[in-house]
Amino acid sequence: MVTSSSKSSRSGFRTLISLLPYLWSKDQWTMRARVVLALAFLVLSKIAIVCVPIFYKKAVDTLTLADSEIFLVVPVAMIISYGLARVASLGFSEARDAIFARVGQRAVRTVALQVFRHLHQLSLRFHLNRQTGGLSRIIERGNRAIELLLRISLFNLIPTAIELTLVFGILWYMLDLVIACVTFATVIIYITYTMVVTEWRIRFRRRMNEADTSANTRAIDSLLNYETVKYFGTEGHEAARYDERLINYEDAAVKSNVSLAALNFGQAAIISIGITSVMLISAGGIVSNNMTVGDFVLANTYLMQLYQPLNLFGFVYREIKQALIDIEQMFQILTVGADITDKPGATRLEAEGGAIHFEGVGFGYDNRLPILKDISFSLPAGQKIAVVGSSGAGKSTLARLLYRFYDVDYGSVTINRQDIRDVTQVSLRAVIGIVPQDTVLFNDTVSYNIAYGRL
Image (cartoon, rainbow, N blue to C red; front, top):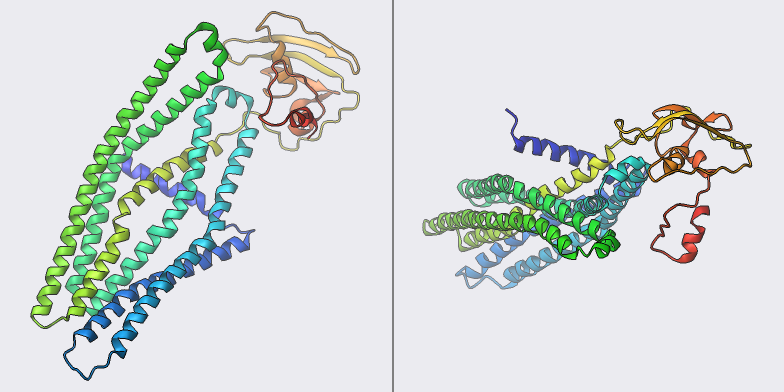
């Protein structure tokens, strides 16, 4: 039996795989070099930070020695090394962030541009059937999620994993295997608990996403029809419909916050038990003269240093899961195929002469409701023709078929004896001029809108 959790994991893994080419592009060696340098600085910063507690331990041990012949040079050197290690760790981290910033932003830009271009390649049917408000929200969340996922992975998840590995080895080598195992077990229990509870919580986040998209779609749809609302005085009705969507979002958000409180309490309890256990073991080692005060400080410092980023693991895991959902929704747009495509071997339209022929054309937006039946007419080059008919008779449909926004169900449309299905869409639309029935302007200058037809 396949659970929803395993399906979600596989889906998230596929999303990550789909994202990798944008980070490691074969034709952009500078971006690949930045990735390598960022990872190198990441490792160096973690090596520096795990040295900090060691210098701290050495300083404490030398300061607590009873021998008066010990000069202060050693503890002072350890304290200076402690400070330098912290500065080095911070410097390497900032260098990593600065170098990787270009990579992350380039990936976001590339994906956003690819989705935008793909949307313009899709058929008119897709855009008429799709709600623009919900679509724009999916793209917005997807772009934001890519940046968030990259930042969290490089700045939190991977560094924490490296630091945990180094700390485990150091605790085992310098202190005791038991302390290392308790620390490791605490981390594993913490991570397991966080993942299990977060998987339980993720359905609330999905409902929040769905409710958020629904509410946004409702609001944009209502505002786009502002005049219609005013004509019929239905402001109250529109507000009530919008509030219905907001109520659904409110309920999902409350459930998400309540489950978050349960998650946070469990995480805090696990960390507290782990720290207390290690400190008790270390205290016992001091009493039995197997450890020094510096060892006690070393263990405590490592735990506090390790659990600080680990304390964010719940947030990190939640954000990664949410980001993967948002990215997956955006990538699903890229899987939508266009209804109208250029056939293999399509040629450029030779429009000299430009005679247009509709030959036995039949078409319907819905197969059950045909708009055109066996329509045939010719428009010789240089001539004019007027199409007259009642609303819904198919006048605008003729223009859409000529532009090949749709393919005819049967029959053919030819220009200069070339079936428009045999030529490229770009060359077809480049030779046709149109004055739209509805005046639609871009949110730009008047000159931009006037010149748009010849950009």
